[in-house]
Length: 223
Image (cartoon, rainbow, N blue to C red):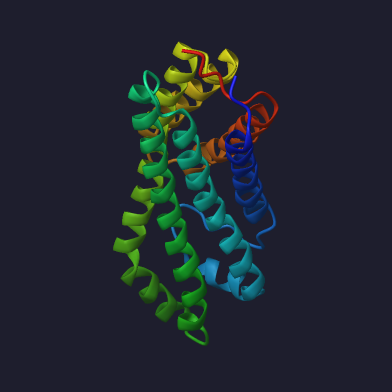
């Protein structure tokens, strides 16, 4: 078993990512749905700076998750593990930063839109919403496929955990099942944001579990 500064740093990175992601979301004064709508600007404007800072915390949670995945790769991506660990972690990282970029759009347009719609009539606000519809569509696609890309990576990563017993086998299966759920739900049930929501909370739980296991046991690189 390898348990040292490297695994401790990786473990804490997973835990900090989970805390930033979840508390940034849970403490936010308003949650934007699948698209930005006119009522979002009114809700955000009620406490705009608080909302901005909570969203910043949430976005840095995705960034910290990327750091955790890079750290995991640096510890485990060696022969023979790297054939699954490297592409698996790479796809999770791609998905993670796709989600970070999508959330950064909602953060920027949400705050900017408060000023742009201030004092305008309902018809003018609706015209503003109509003008950003195409961007809204792109960002919604980013969110869906960020989850799908992450799901592909989690399946590969979990398969590597299971095959070489890098972490506890139950955690390997948890990783695989989370990846399958992300892919299956998002691709099998398109455009249903309410069904997608639980995936975020399960991923936060996975991050915490990964962090605790790495801190307590490290990784098994016996082969």
